[in-house]
Image (tube, rainbow, N blue to C red; front, top):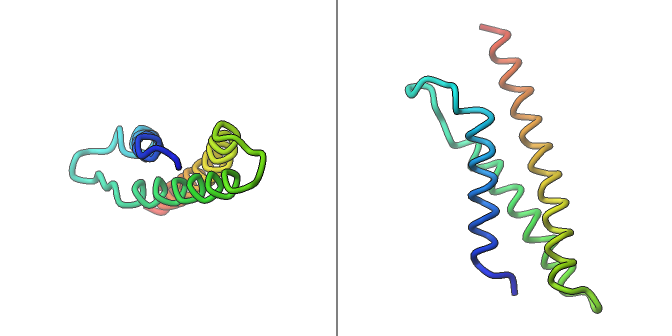
Length: 95
């Protein structure tokens, strides 16, 4: 079973990355972390699902499962960040 600390590290990394990219330069009144938390949760869910899928197969080690979960969770994290960036870019262009 995956240690609880790995889940905490994944969520902390995803939220920190999202905050650093989107919210760092905004004024304090306009900062919102809701969408960043949703992105972090989605990527964590993919990470956890693929980790469990690989660990239940015969012959796979925990390291293999962590690598697959990290790879695909990271890809989903990047896709979600890209989508949020496109929406943010569109919103800024309209005002």
